[in-house]
Length: 288
Image (cartoon, rainbow, N blue to C red; front, side):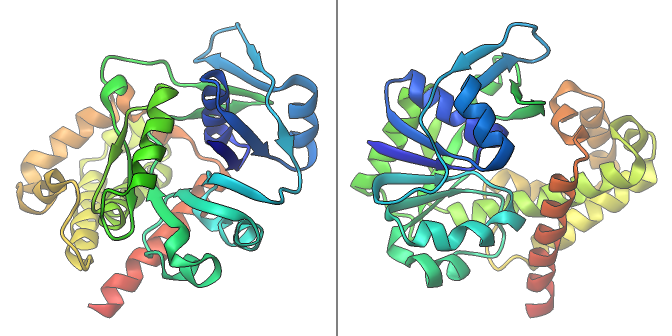
């Protein structure tokens, strides 16, 4: 498959490098100083805080044109509008691997509903200058799935091809028949969690405030109750039924665990994304 990756941050760079390592014809879109760095050094990868940095030379494009078998979009949700016109002028299926709780209609108007698939990247890391420091693999992360789905939930030949593409690069890609509901559920959980961490001043600070954790859980419940669909995965329904007194200590332990470390990121990009997702979730409450 001929693949174009849109977004040269942590996720776009990491996924491009691994697809390239797996032998796929993949190019990465970049701009400005990031473009210059990638052309000079390639994608620079390091595991965790390791001093060992690996360089992966990949084709980098500033202004993509023409046709691709797949265009994979890895940008923050509040940055999507800036890429829609460019993507619309390319030929090929478009996989949005983006945090999004507003459904596909806005994108479908510009790109065409028949071209769109939804997904969610299951791996990540941080930028250290121009070096992508990806999270160390653990027995758990190896089995965390990367959900991808058609808007209508069908298993189609193109979805099968896309799943195989990512699996060949070592990602645990999995078909998700309710991808839109999956993304809404994820946002309903992630936004209160991320905003509570930010407001408290960090993971440990939030874990030390049972009242703030309780307020966070109540906002999660309100978000889930306002959704027009049932939570996906179904396990998130437990957030609406398990007593608060049992959930609070569970979340406090989670916040003190290594699994919560990705939430410690407090960049303007993360804040902007959480603000947009919160606005999208509020729209469901208003419409209810």
